[in-house]
Image (cartoon, rainbow, N blue to C red; front, side, top):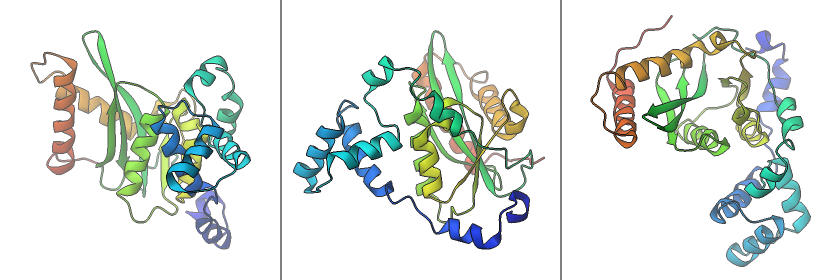
Length: 247
């Protein structure tokens, strides 16, 4: 892989040992931020860390880490909708897979689950070697948290992440600083399809297409909740019983 990426072996192993020094603090800040229903600013978060955990973290540090990981109250994001565009462009990565889907790595994407006039969103991470869905999350909201939750679930299930490629399209969730930093902090190499080129992520595109064909059209579904449960059952069947073909 070092030869393909043009990276020296010494530099590769040096990179593998480097973890973001702010990552553990970020996890604590994010926990407080989420528990506040994403309304706390840096001062309240610092105060909460002190009062509930006895952890002294000054305001400047909390603010710096929140900016680094793009943690902002929802109402602030709505007031400044273009604030993150610059950072998203900086987070675009090259395609490391180059359509070689028979190597060690993961592929990921988000797809719609639509029934009637209601919809949900399925975020999936597939393992290229086993073709199993290593992690999936279904939500009524298509936002960064959906992708982050899927990523964290996959990370918890995997022992050796160093040097593993995670490939996606250039959707806004995958361009977030939080997504990038979590990947880099765990030694995961981010790979992205070229814009407007779905074949660069053909494995996950095909997977979601098969899922819809074998769930939506093969069942007498009455509502979205029932459809979601059918999808969950199918994913379990896919991982444990369904025969898989690799191309």
